Length: 96
Image (cartoon, rainbow, N blue to C red; front, side, top):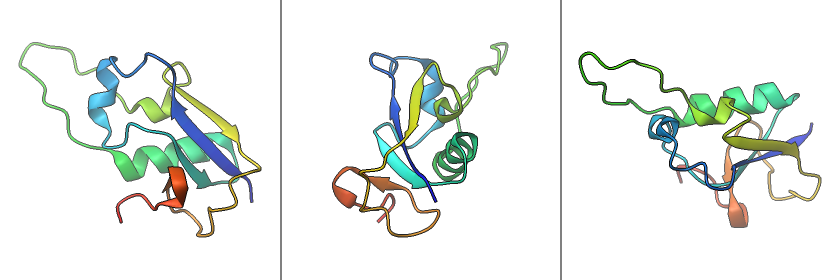
């Protein structure tokens, strides 16, 4: 199964959407498609966002947004050895 590397687009971390995720660094996950990789990362890293009365609720996970995150197959990511587990740089598991 392909392993996808996802990472923030350079200079995108100041976008309000980053408040909707607990992960703000490059990561890897196995998935059949890019869309599934994005959905899996989004699902595992969602966090609540404070909303103020009268303000629009238009903050979404940046992991689904190609303008905020890159996503591509990484054939060199041999450290991803568990299905559906997010890995960080150096082979560390996310949430360990």
